[in-house]
Length: 237
Image 1 (tube, helix red, strand yellow):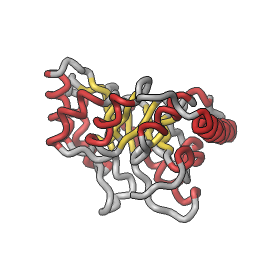
Image 2 (cartoon, one colour; image 1 turned 90 degrees about the vertical axis):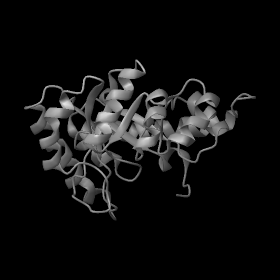
Image 3 (cartoon, helix red, strand yellow; image 1 turned 180 degrees about the vertical axis):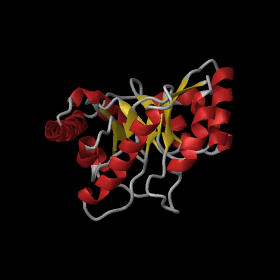
Image 4 (tube, helix red, strand yellow; image 1 turned 60 degrees about the vertical axis):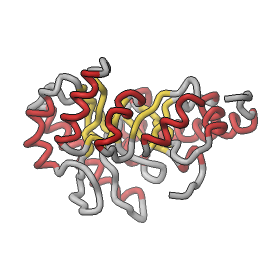
């Protein structure tokens, strides 16, 4: 990266990380869960690579990006980081995503899953870890499988040997208070529990919750939380 990370930035990110982890631990205490079961994904979209170097030095080593092209430009400059794709994936960028990301959290159609299955096998990355994105609230503005459509598609999804179905992911509705997001998170957990009983290939991971509502998500069973603003500060779209 050309220079060592800024010590002040490292201290800033370490403090932000510790605050999030304290909040996670408190939420786990309320829910009777083990904090070690929760993975923090630091959402790094639009954050410049020097700041990401400091973030990694502060312990934020798992980074989540919304766009393949942005992650592709950053990855060689941020040693020590692992990368999740958390944003929508266009089919023409699927090959690059398989080569770059450790996990793709936004598999939202059967067609995309089939393509990733083939590409992961060709690239000797199989089984590629993925989450199935679910539109729990049936929101027309959101991507993802509708719950009933996912249930129909799961027999074929489970048979794709190039993919490892780590669990389910959802993007919550815009709400005015964290508590209003609870029904979405509970819905994803309940769907996961029901489908796991029928499809052993589906993992129990639940990627849900962001900066404003991750504590509620943890209370409802999240195993991954995707936190950006609480770590990196407010950013543009």
